[in-house]
Structures are given as structure tokens and as C-alpha cells.
Length: 342
Image (cartoon, rainbow, N blue to C red; front, side):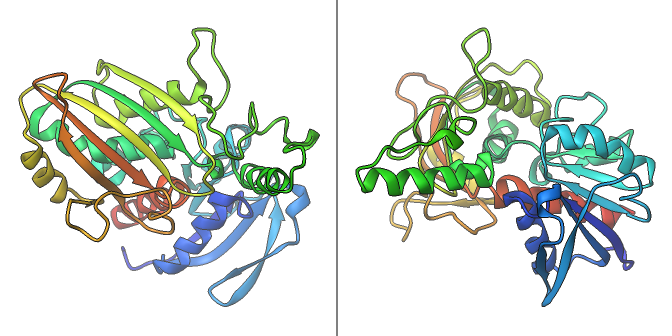
């Protein structure tokens, strides 16, 4: 850190990601001067405990960002579209976890373990953080790309309901109780959350379906992976699946490299890479599960093996806490780099 303190705003502070950002800032002793918490009108006045004291949640307004140095936006694309430019105009740097700016060519999309250098090239006051699935992919793929190049990537993601926010968590909880009690799983309040029942089910649709049969999430993961890796023409095929876990998402990954990379060599590369914990046969955790990674800060990689269908192929299993490392921690890590460079 530079030794100074920063006045910080968290927009969406009562949501799953925003609340985790607040906790992580406290845990990592981020040099905060004044901390202001913003959320929707129904959350205004709610107390949030931070470092042993309670802070009230405020509404967003015309002068909400006066004096703010750094603003975390964790409240969705519509809020970011309206208020992030206002925060920048007031003099703040914005770290946005929504989809609003991820594909903007003037806004860096950053995963610190992979492309922190992109922060030095930013032209404006906004930095975007990718989806959790994108973070899992690029942290695992980055070291492999550096060691052997990438020809093609095929992945299936298994994404927790917390990726849909608190309503996703509440929906899975309610539906699970209803199914176990032999009641109808869903009520009218569930309609806008998932396309189908999620309790004891898997849904091969994350976000809206597009005209070509893909989904908005698949489009975002492909675009985000290419942007973070700096490989605009990388062939990727992605299927995103919503699964009935509260926290913790995973990716089944098949990679074709430019030159042969034996599994032992790949494991050595991954073992040495920042942000990765490699799980190996004989370990207490020979491969990660979604339940294992909750509350942790790393991207976990296991089941590294050769792909029998192609000579330059590898298969991997990747998991992370989608709310923590897959959103909140990544945003805070970006902010930590920005403060070191200021």
C-alpha cells in the first residue's frame, strides 16, 4: 500500500457480493479512511457490522460519491450503467463486478493473477471484474497458455445459485424444503430467478437464452476469457449449467495446446502458478468439490490428466468459491493493486 488511506464506497452492500466485499476489506486491513455503504431503497437504514462497528446503509443519490476515492459496484448492470459514470465524474476509481463494462474496449477486464498489467493501460476511471466462471477458467488456463500455448478450449461450468444473488440462495432453500416436505417446489415469487426448478436439479441455462441457442453467460465467459488472456481468436466452446449448490462453482475443462504438455509437466506449471492450489492423488483432498472451496481465496485445480482423444490434450477440474474469489476478492485484489500504484 502507498501509506495513505482511501475513502471507499460499496454499492450493493447488502447483497451477496457486496457484503463479501465489505468483509474482505476488513479482513485484509484495506487502508480505509471513510467507508460508505449504498444499496436499494428497501435496504436503507439496515446496519452492517464492519470491524466491530455498525454502519448504516444509504440510498444512492446525486452527491453520493462526493469525496470518494474508490467505489466498488456490486449491484447489477443497470445500477452500474447509471451511477458508475457519476462516481468517476466525482473523482472516484470504480471497480465494477457487473456485466456492464466487461466488453467495453476502453475498460480493462482484470484478474490480478493473470493480467494485472492491464491496469496500467486503463484510459478511464473504471475497471471491470469478470464472471466467476471466467476467473476460474483464466487462472487455470493462463499458466498453461504460457507454457505450451492454446489451440482450443472446451468447458462445462457448474454454477452455484449464489451467482444469481440472494434471491437465488433463497429460491434453492425454499424449493429444497418444499420438495422434502412433498409440497410443490416453486411459488410465483420464483419465476424470475431460474427457468426451472433448481432443487435436486441441474439447469443447462445460466442467464437468458440467445437466438443461436447459447446463453448470455456462455457469451460472457467466452468474451471474458479471450479478453483477459489477450487471445481474441481463441476457439472456445462453453456450456454453463446452474446446479443446486449454494456456494462454490466448478468447471470441467478440456484444453488442446500448441505443443505437447505432459500431465506431470502441466501439474508442475500449475503448482507454481499464483492463486492456484493444486490437488493431487494422495493428498487429503485429491480433487476439489464445490463444498470444499467455500470461504477460500484460491482457485483449486485437480484431476489433471491427458485427453485420450487428442495428442496435445489435457483435462482438468477447477473449482472456486464463486462469491468470494469469483467476485468479491477479485475486486478487492484489483483495488489493492490500484492503491499500490497511486
